[in-house]
Length: 585
Image (cartoon, rainbow, N blue to C red; front, side, top):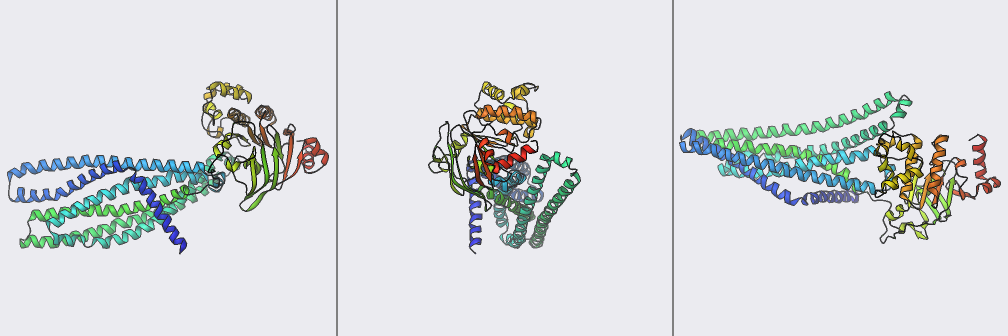
């Protein structure tokens, strides 16, 4: 019961937030509604023109009305056309602007969420939230809200017209409408449920596409094309079945309304025809009434279809707000400390870290002096990457503290903290942009000279100059046009240009051949000068220049010291050293 009340509260809050977005566009909404009132008035006037045309022109043969009524018809339809154009433009502007704001908010929120969030969510699913789910909301705001307001105004005007013409016959015409709306609301709820399933299936399909396109080299190398095709066809068929289920529910709404409209029209013809035959109603009044009723049923049928669109939009809104309401594990401090751009000492004091209720790090105590180079070694899965990920607050410690110059990093502004840290990872992360913009990523105020100097220091200048467009060369998605060594040197140039006093190198040379490794290693030596550096390395040949080597096993520091000392101890580091060098690595 408590969960049900909480769920209702959340739904109500989400509806309120959507309405606030719409309300912010009040000026355009006001003018759009004025246009809708003009449209409703024009449509309401049409039955009265028909009454005058039949009674005054065709029955009474009034020549003056023959001249006046066509002019009135042209005027009314001109007003109707202008009002329709401006109403359509204004409401679409409102809808598109709301969607723009939602997309901005969604992307803004996703970018602020921690790395743990991205590890739980598939990339394709997040892309689907921003593109597909928001698009469904756009249809609701642009089409459904517009149609609801416009058709409601038209119905009010035509209701006035039919009651003015004959109130008894009007009661016959509209008394059956409440019965018609009951199945419409039932169908709308079913559509909303199916739409949620369809959006989940669409997100799953997008995620599958992203994975297979990015990993197409592996798909081909392992001959898995047929398997991936079969997997995609299965997901696509699931989406097809859900979409057809939704179409089935949507398609039922129109026949229900057509039947109701037919019953209403039949009653009007029987009752109105009887009054015309008895002489209690003129033919003009009957035709005017009949026209008004038929025009009245049009908006009613549209509203029934719009309910389906609204339910689909609300399903999309729920998925969007699920992301917008996600709380970040990494919180900005209330009164953040701003660090100076200077040399820093980094201390991990009694640090414990849990991931998915598993202790990844246990009782870590480490002191890295300003400008000191520390190498973290150990077998894969020992916790080395988790340890360095605590420093820029990609995760927060479960217990203990990480300090920079004796300040707990949880008290430091996140942007200020990360401004002090540069990272080079094993997998070079580059963007489908120019070489220049990739190097200047994080420092867009850098001059061309600074970018070139960074490239030279990273031993990247020569190969960049060999490109047809030099620094303005587009490098492709994830730097796909470059070799592994070239990508890594651009990443090092990017870190050099950031000029951060703390440096994290996460297996930066492990995937390179010997020639590329030598160049990258030389670039890294330039990068490490004067910086507090944490190096994660599997190749022990790359850590000989470290001031200290830290051996991490099963989330604990078991040894630390210089290479010669650790070999002499014949402990864990000695075992690693023997395994690698005895195998000729």
